[in-house]
Length: 337
Image (spheres, rainbow, N blue to C red):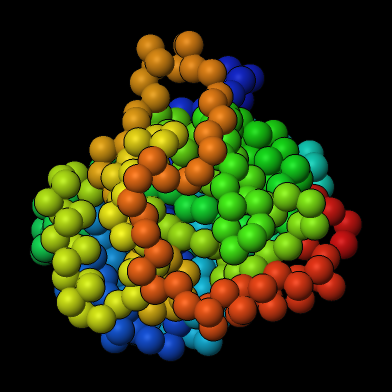
């Protein structure tokens, strides 16, 4: 048992938490390996139990693809940068009567960490907290020149929710997230409202999307996309060229966002959600933080991001899933049901 830690000195988790890893369940491990290594340019290793471990830095595992039928993200790991920050967030969760399970041993090692604490996050997506990642001994072997991680973490993810107010409260009250800005856009005749939340210097680690008016969720998957930040523009353009040549569906061609100014493209992964590969987004430095004011933008892109693979069938599928979602209640963290 760990000795008690005085957490009174920790008043905010901002700057002390980052996106650590993602766990995916798929029957298409061979396809995921091809997509990740030959397409995106990541480092891949097969590990115990048949798991595909994807690396982009010194961490043993940043993205894990495990054998299973979900074809979806099943868990998100959050790295607390010290023990005081970890104990602070655990106290908040338990104070809100949220069930938290401590995990160690082989189950934690499977995630590439020494120990973790798991609970049900928004939409019942499993959230896992950790402080100490296991580091890799083997050097990286990948086509990309590198990725921007460090204290800012893995990257960011976006999720569509029918309960955006509850999701926003969770991230702000539990993780001390700050609102970077908002965007309003039209997609397939529906108005989308997006909120971008930062946990550290990265412009956003989480984006929340909701339809205006009737709240619908047109997605089958838990997230819309996972973003990775490449170190060079060449990494982005070369990956775009490779993935198109390999026949992967480009959801959105290269373009630039108005809020974080990241230049990126989106490709559909073997499991159906998208991966955004981007370069050179705004970093909210300590100096910029002191004077940051959330902005509001019309349209998700300044230019580009043309939908290359959008078809009538995919539009109808999204509409059908959106309407079906109206019949189901979405889980909110801490809710009794």
